[in-house]
Image (cartoon, rainbow, N blue to C red; front, top):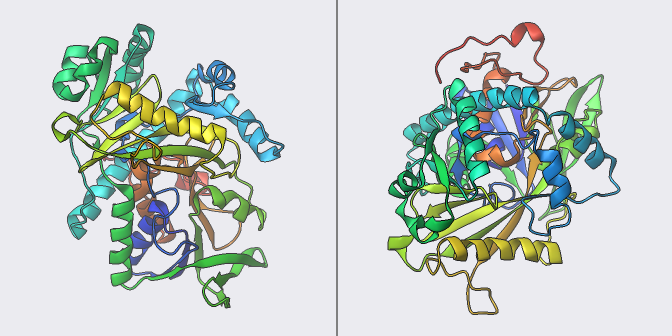
Length: 443
């Protein structure tokens, strides 16, 4: 089959790789000059199968109200004159109960385990190096109530095969001694040895190179002008080459939309309306000044809802979600406050370990922001739409790196008429109910 994939982030590139592995003729259309230049560019780096928890839970509504007036809030809802934002918000609130939370956890863990296995397969077959650390993920808490709740969350995850264990403060510090200077604030934590970390951008860039070497065509610097719909299916896509101004009409047997947060607006042009809304996330990359004191274990700070991962001689810290449309600016008061929170928190938790000084102070922090394509459930849409030849692979929220390899493999399998094998039944978008019963097997 001839397949055109829109988007060269981790999702689109993984999709292209797995399609090419199955012998399909693949073209990737990407508006940026290279792979992984948007959402996959500078995330937290965590492959967190054991922390695949949806944002929607019974505590979320109260926290959202409480956090609305804090510029540095972990999850900030900024009301806009945008029906899609309010629609998304209402559907999100409908998921804020224990039954929905457990149902969504089950789905996310299933995809996470499947994806982790797929990632390992790709790494074994390609030899890609991406500053990978297989040290697990730790999660520390700074108040007793949150730590007690962590025990309940760990028990829920364990029911679905996730080996998340609750650890005392002393046990946590044995796992990662770098937090000893912050020990007086830590009440305890959790730890999963099976998780890992690595640079998603580096991985995606190298996977794109290998995919191209195997015959896929990457059209970088090309904008999608329009999807041509005829007789209930997509007949072609019209693309605009930025360098030359040339507009081309490309035909294929299948079209896969993997454009992150921009997936929903594109799909609406042909009558497919999905509740995918952008969550603006922030990250900072700091040079490490004291390598012997910097953490190797990727870690989650529960109080500030941020994650930190070591990439060689740098520390990546990322977190916070801002629901306020497609704004990517870093110079607004809110954006500056959120960036400042990242540097101040690292200096508080790991004093003197990183160069957290601002540019004005002589430092060289690299701040970044990207849009996380979130669904109200945090479960992505993977499958075929009701428009002929049109498929979707989007809505991964903050779990794009965790779910990327598996989402690409599952998409390729579905297009090839195969049934992805997962530990649980995963509800693939657009797949008839009779085909949704997937054969269980250990991931």
